[in-house]
Image (cartoon, rainbow, N blue to C red; front, side):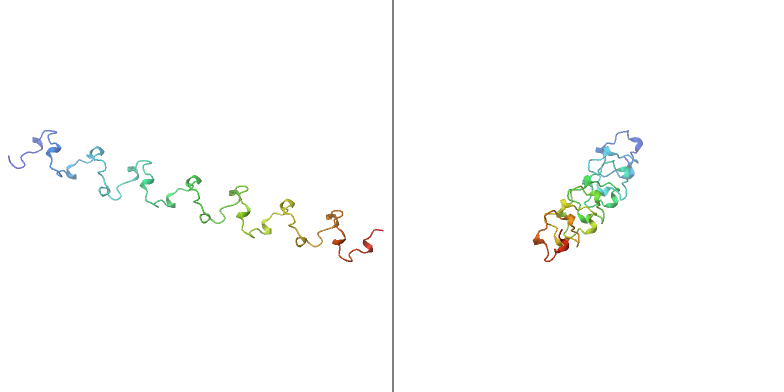
Length: 183
């Protein structure tokens, strides 16, 4: 038989089987466009080196197929997050420190009633302008916390004195004269 004597017209359909093909004899030019599909590929046979740069588009990726295991460490930054997407449930316990808050970010609407206690207030942090007028009453004063230095001159009038509260030892020498005595 002459070399190259057998051509396509001499071959019956289906007569060339994989056993008749030499290893590595079929290259890309021998394949019809779209001839290789998923059923022709062994699991794991497509590796990074087989994928051209920029070949994968969004429509190649199944919806919800990318999970945490697919993300490199620290690959998600602020530009990847939608506004409002980080909720309190997403934050790990203890992850928010004072340095994470913008100045003036916390106001009275954010503080639960009764949550600020004496131990939270720095010494000398409260000034007169922080206290609402007439907000401190007798119930707020410790016993014997008001002494003479806290009283304005002339603030104690006879109406403020309890009956029988002033005895001789409370009077300055010479304070009582004839004009102070009843007839």
